[in-house]
Image (cartoon, rainbow, N blue to C red):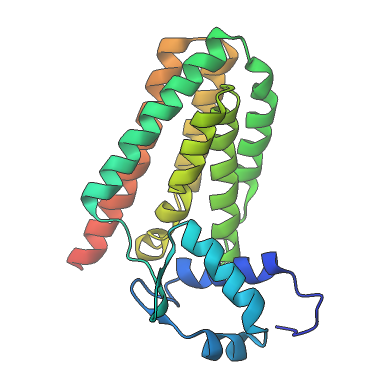
Length: 223
């Protein structure tokens, strides 16, 4: 990486995130800022700022007098609790959107889902990051449209898609096809203002995504 001042913090952020998602910076690993800054050929100052951002997202942990280390992945209990919180927030949001007739988001949700479907997965982890970011934007757009800023802040503060993405390395793939199909069902339910159907499909989507993730993880663990 070029050390010129043109290197953006967002580039550094994405590079470190890619390493965390690929487990090149593995769960629990101590981060030596001096070593990492030399390896990436960047100044320690923006690196520290990026790590502080990851700390707020709970991807890294800062310990006084010890420094930064990569946080552990969610255990089964915490993963279940996070998904339960997602279901509560997203079903409430989708009810609000339909009851208030905020169906103007349909076009945006279709557009985001088309982008998700069109990603050509390759050997690079950048495609996984793109999928993860678009998936997050799809769900955040739905929550934000409910018009409750406290709800949006609570959802964003969970950083759920960042934590889920850390499992993709072990799983070996993303559920792109299944997610896109389930997203389509969610948008169709909003489009036709079917509250019961909308609650059902968004709940099933969150649960099925969790089951797909854990099923593949269990198989990989057994092998």
